[in-house]
Image (cartoon, rainbow, N blue to C red):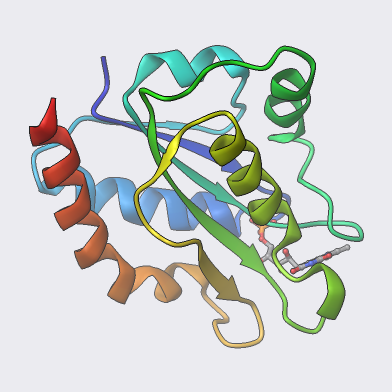
Length: 154
Ligand SMILES: Cc1cc2nc3c(=O)[nH]c(=O)nc-3n(C[C@H](O)[C@H](O)[C@H](O)COP(=O)(O)O)c2cc1C
């Protein structure tokens, strides 16, 4: 079993860069990590901790690469009380009403299925960060601390 499963939803690759930045740091801290760019419901069983990194596209929609995960969980809900998770949502605050809606949708879905949010959703605004991976620096230290604590619990 992997220590951390990173499930990515991306259109233009920004979320992939963010996921890879996080994976590097998590691996350097001694954890095993898998980055999955085409996640499905079955992937949730491969780890006790999941990090979702997804952008928003269209008018508040999930990228096609991660939409199947959302739909599969809607169609066949899964009890996720064993699971700890966090969400990094890439978006653009000029999309006022649907800012980071994709990430927020998955956050709500996982919480509804009983998974435990280990951190508040991190929003990375394209208006603020030309390179989205820069938006993760401050968050990373906290995440490593949370991951250590959660992993020791088991
Ligand atoms: C066609 C299009 C639609 C978008 N719609 C939204 C949106 O509804 N809400 C939002 O917060 N960001 C929206 N964005 C901004 C992207 O989510 C943002 O640029 C993100 O960094 C892209 O990450 P990615 O490279 O992983 O796809 C949109 C971008 C494009 C090009």
